Length: 309
Image (cartoon, rainbow, N blue to C red; front, side, top):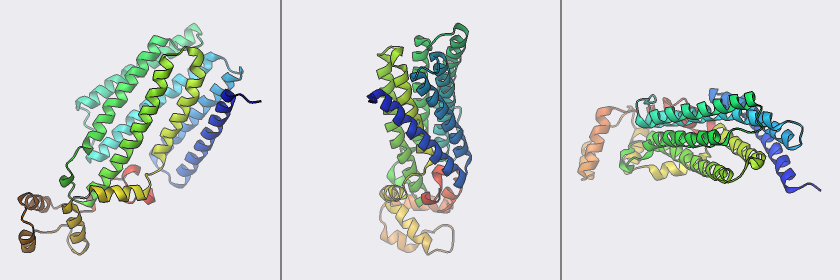
């Protein structure tokens, strides 16, 4: 009879193999740079997971299981840091502000975490230990949490915006995509945090169990960024995030031959709100094309039509 632990290993291996195949198929049919990177990461994680399963079966020594974990974790931290900054770059419509205190803090803590991983790897190989040094392990994980936290705040702080400031459809759609990634990443962080807090209270005898759950979460991360958000969710949230001006802009632009709409006499007569007039005037002065914002977003997360991603 198969034990519950063995069933967990078998199930995780099957799910991770299936996820790798799905990511490979998605990359083949919808090739993008980020999907190629995620595919490489999924293959690396699948290999590390296979080593963990073989270690559970007493085929591979603990040393090489720990080594596989440290190598794949180094790749994951760097990848996740870049993914978070990439989201922030597109939410802000511009390059990453590396002088921002949150980004600087993220770079510093990422460097510290990678240094801890490098030290653990070297010591593991030199001393022929079975497991990483726990103080360095805990320090590295803590720094990684701070790194992800700062880049997370930097990227999604752009969503803290008044509803009335979203003056055309592109901004509402972008906000919807940002909120989607904010929600799913928050859930992922919570699960990852709970897992490692639990392990900090255990000994390294539970290391294999930690890795089983850790690798599953890594594949969930890959799937989160490989597939686009559900189109109906984005459409629903876009409608919710529309301001009255956004809807007015959208409808007028549909029947206008120009790229912007002008303030007409009817606008002034029908809209007595001084703030509303200010927004219309600012919108006209900037001569923003309703479609320009999303056309400039070539990244997979911010395509104008999520169903084509």
